[in-house]
Length: 180
Image 1 (cartoon, rainbow, N blue to C red):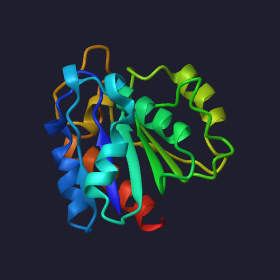
Image 2: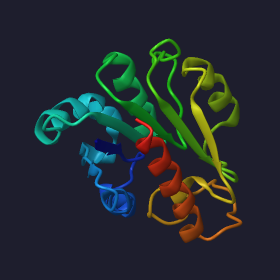
Image 3: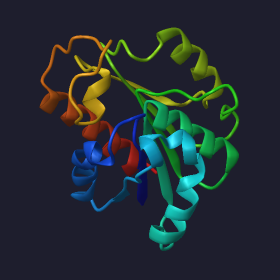
Image 4: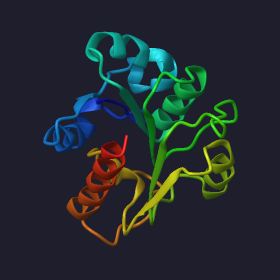
């Protein structure tokens, strides 16, 4: 599998290297694109060229953190049948990213103490995802634990270490990806 990870808004791609390295140990090729101004919203369709360049016949899973996740969901909605799966990391699909009947395998991860993601918007967005979406709460985690970019203004207070949260995130993704 090829895994493409869209970074969160204003977050450098290097913040997700830990995840790429964790997945590489299981043989997953992971690409983390750089976006102009560190905003995936500027080029949500970027996955298309990355799939052409790095896919080499591999099935592709698109993942994204925060706003990057919303853009990944939009790409998935715009390219039905083009992906093997979608992973939303502290993210939700926007109003125009209707995936409920897509049949696309989806995993949605959110930190237990994430106060950046709007909980009401997240709950409403689940209606736009397939009914069998895997929903996982990262125990003790916060929004900024999905990437290594330091504390985020407005985020909650974690009750676990970053290392423990990253272990939970990586294990969840490995389990999800192994089932595709």
